[in-house]
Image (cartoon, rainbow, N blue to C red; front, side, top):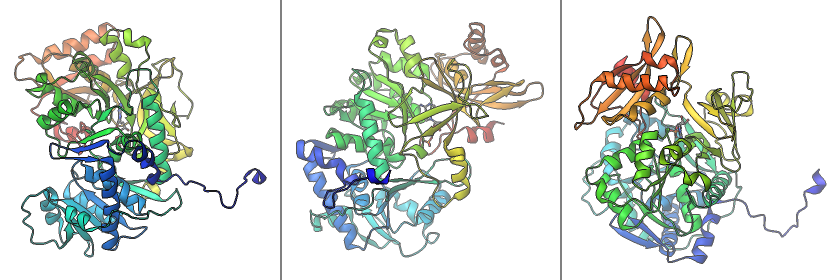
Length: 545
Ligand code: AMP
């Protein structure tokens, strides 16, 4: 084989580095806009200069190849600058999850060995609270959006804008091995210590190319293209906002960064900039649609991927009625993240909303370069009958190669050469996957497995339900029974037995298995959420069982 690898000594090998992702848009569309809230609009050209300035500013305070630069900021043009400048210097970008508990945050800062932390003024109190518990010797840069920062403890190297203004707008970004680590962040796991995942330049480039192609592939539904207007509504600290900021920059589309998520501001930006493409978790979309003023905003040109948790059918139908092109996407922190999308075909666009929702809420089809299997306990593929369930295992060139400095969990993640997702799913005859649960969330009633997601879907259709989560509850007769924890709307009065009745009706018409009638119901004012806004079933179990 080796004589088939032929190289000309002077040929340029073109390593797959993040710096190549912005070359085309800068050449083709330098005046395209990058917007920050209602505060600032930059052109791609100015933004690129700022990327160079940031690299020079970091170099001036001693950042070198192999160092780690962490960011604590809301979603912003600055974050996008760090997405490029830090890895392009050969350093590692650590996107700190600002919603972790102080204990977990200390752990991640120490574990990632952050050399520099770029911190928005809003998070100074948080840093102050852990001061003395993180090692000395780190350098800090302040992002001060014109506010008065009262800070007694931190010696900042400077303020972000001032440092950029003083730095040169040209930095010579070097070439290096495409397998160099570019980013690190921590899983938002609800148990145990957060686990660090990491991605190389090559992986981020391949994820960008794959996602770009997957979103450009459909004839009309679920598309993202050069003329889209993009606004992320999943935090930039979590899995690079699903990698879509890299896609948007690669395509040269207009980008809008919303800062801290405030529903009224999100709705205002969505409509004033005519945003056409976003992504968020179901709870955020639910919040936006339930916002009192929401109906005043026209969202009929908006396409939104829902991921991070299953897209409930009732929410999908509500969104479709508002004219929103909604569909599910699936992935996890360990997978960079995008593995599959539930886009629909041109023929399927003619179906009723109810029928379309069944397709759009599935986990969908693997994107190019993602190999997904659903396997039983022996590792055999389950039949494609949409009933037989198994675990999703995956391969792709952009999956984390392990957990940072954690050999034991890394081996478990990659057992048998496939990445284990712990997601339970079925596959239909067309090859479309549908997640029915997390392995830890399935409920075993009298020996039969029940999907908590399917029961939640049925209950969410009741007009009085604001939010619902179903967990398994120990039971002397059945071993376990489903417990629905519900938050009801103030405006609708109803009895708990109505919830039991709609579940029973779904059992009668074959939507849910017979065992679902063992359901119990409890009411609460709020449902616990994780640091990225997903339903936290571990916390619910602690609270209600
Ligand atoms: P995280 O690593 O925090 O991004 O969480 C990843 C997990 O979220 C996956 O393993 C799934 O359990 C869940 N998830 C993500 N997308 C979907 C989806 N479309 N449907 C169902 N569950 C999802």
